[in-house]
Image 1: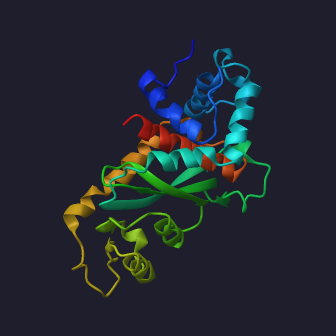
Image 2: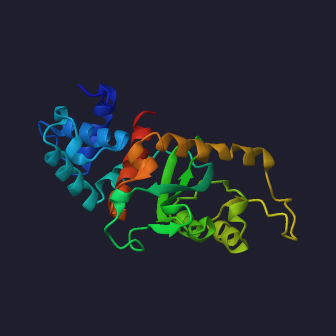
Image 3: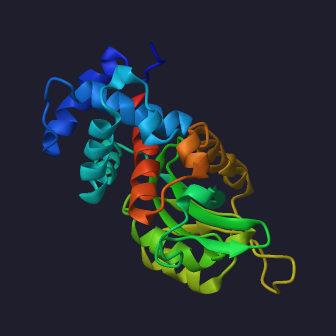
Length: 250
């Protein structure tokens, strides 16, 4: 029997949320969800799923239905309703794209080539406790600061005191964008910038490790740490499922 991920208390919490998303509790639903989580954790091809989870094609077709309707992204959004956004931290990380992700238009599917090979980027925002609240995918060569305004727009900053990011986000238009949302920025200026860093809360800035820790947790799942999915929408739902699972364990 393969190692499973859903404890009874997890399933008790997850089941009504799935029903809310019109994913009905058929006899094999928990088994199917376990199969999707197993593939996320080990990164195996769908056809190599152990028989314990049922027919691999049945599990794959269920996942395909869910990702095409963005059900897993909706699941992640529902689980983050109680996030503590007093402080928000943002950052990005590179994800190596496996050769199995070949076959689609790379520009449309958020994959680009660089000296290091084909890659995707995850741009992530976490709350004051380091729990993921939203993310955006881009190709691997897009600079973080170009995606940051769209990432900020996805965050409800109404109760946020400060948004923190590293020097890679040193951009006055981005600072203005954050402040227009009613939030202070805690982004240091680079050494070659003539302006001062008098606005900085350096004590809070040290807590940026929270977003790095979140990336480390997400990359425990091999289907997140390496992109095997051809389609951006499919990989996006895989990342959303990993984020949702982190919330499910709280």
